Amino acid sequence: MPNRGASRLAEAVGALIGIAALVLQLYLLLRLAAGKGGTSTAAIVEFFSYFTILSNLLAVLAYLGSLMGRGEGAPAFFARPGVKTAIAVYIAVVGLVYVIVLRVLWNPEGLAKLADVALHYVTPVYFLLYWLLFVDKSRLAYGDIPRWLIFPVVYAIYAIIRGTITGVYPYPFLEIGKLGVARVVLNIVVLVAAFGGIGALLVALGGALSRGRKVAA
Image 1 (spheres, one colour):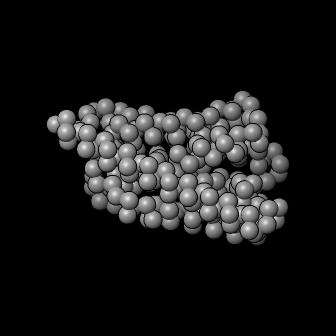
Image 2 (tube, rainbow, N blue to C red):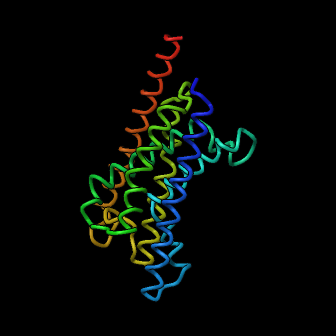
Image 3 (cartoon, rainbow, N blue to C red):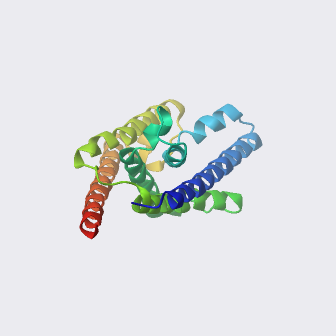
């Protein structure tokens, strides 16, 4: 079993990194909105409309859930190995999509660059390492994957509905007005397949690691 002291240290560090990155990104959006004459409410809504932000927030909740112990309610929910694995899937897709698709679309500088690196590189890599080293993988099952896909599918529906109403889409591959319905649907299918594929990979890896530990014991 992983050393609990090391696990708690990793969770504390991960929570601090995640919170700092989220607070910095929110500050930048609020500052940008103020400079353009926008409202703080609109900036906050925009902040929570990015899958990247939501996935990083879930990672923070997973760290805090474990640090708070195994009681009842939300902390216990986010401390579950299956929930942490789902979050690992989400944060992995965040990093991959950013590196493959979104990274070339802008060139942030200063604090924006710091937030960009923290949210898209540091926290995904850190959470996946945390999952690999400290999360119990012995009960993961392929049957869990359909449940893990609910969140990204619901998010995609929300993003498209909001974008259709406001004309503002969080990601270019969801812009129906420019790409058309068929192309956006195909993009979503590809992304859902990516979530499912990474989920299957983590379940397989978790099973192999769990069997290896049993043999070693």
